[in-house]
Length: 113
Image 1 (cartoon, one colour):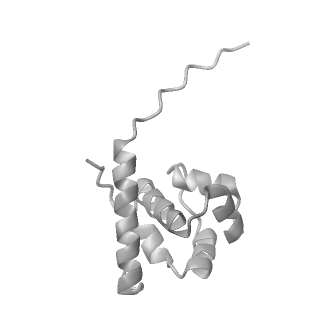
Image 2 (image 1 turned 180 degrees about the vertical axis):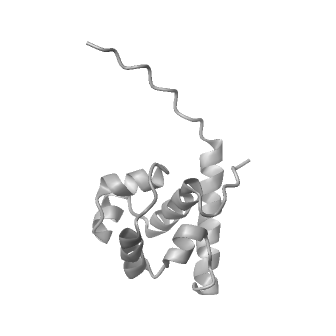
């Protein structure tokens, strides 16, 4: 079963960003570049390592029409019913896939020279 994260958590934001990108049909690298965002930054957001900046969320909005309320909190009030349903369905797919994936093994400690 997929984890149920608070809507504003890094993990929930990451799920929404993954869903949004997947709906575009683009890989992370191309999607990030199409938005004018570095691929490294986008990867960090999808991996829930950092929170997307407001400036980057604005770029997402300008490119997709999906506003920061949805990105940060999952709030769909400013989206059309069709867009809201499309995003919700994709987020559920992302959650199901992430829940079925095994976490990567821990990295071994670094050897000191």
